[in-house]
Amino acid sequence: MALPLIVVALGELGAAWLLPAWVGWFAAWCGLATLYVAIAYVLQRPGMLAKGSPLRWLLAPYLWFSASVATSAQRLGLVERQEIVPGLWVGGWPRRGAPDLHQLDLTAELPRRGEASAYRNIPMLDGDAPRPHDWEAAVAQALAWRAEGRSVLVHCAYGHGRSVAVVIGVLVREGHAADSTEGMQLVNRVRPSARMSPPQRRFMRKMVG
Image 1: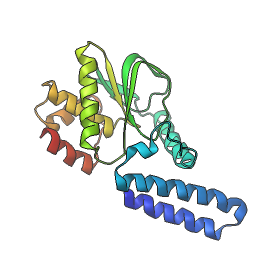
Image 2: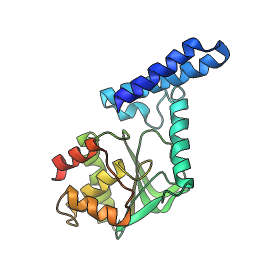
Image 3: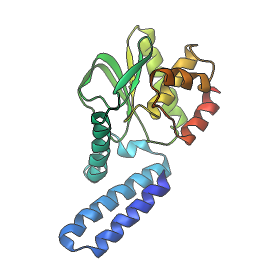
């Protein structure tokens, strides 16, 4: 994921050099924001993009683009969230929050939106395998809420990768699935659009088989 971002950043910075100053400044801003995000991917530091970061003003073009794409996907028909087993939901960025659910937000690039009965953010990078300790923390949080009898929403931007990886971990730990393959099958029965990236699939095979 880092390499495409670096290529895009260099293109934006190159455009800034060639364009008139009155528009080139925006291309430069976009290029710097994209380069910063690429560095976060290289270093595997989702916290660099996390909510409340003092540098989020620098990231504004990237954050606006990410939010716009996620919102457009929902408007074009992406189902926001679906229940995989009773009380365990997977989905994308909530449009109006999740007031009846405990919300586990795995996005680093999107702001919190709406209310939830409880909320925790464990940021992960889109498209990449999560850091093992972040994944373990997310699975443990979901399991703890479920042990309290709470209904849990695990979400990322689209409900395709990061959130699915954590939900599969919960399914395996609770005995609903034997391994990542069975967990993915359970998810796809309800949410057929869910697709983890190759790094995420390799990570899940390592973590739960």
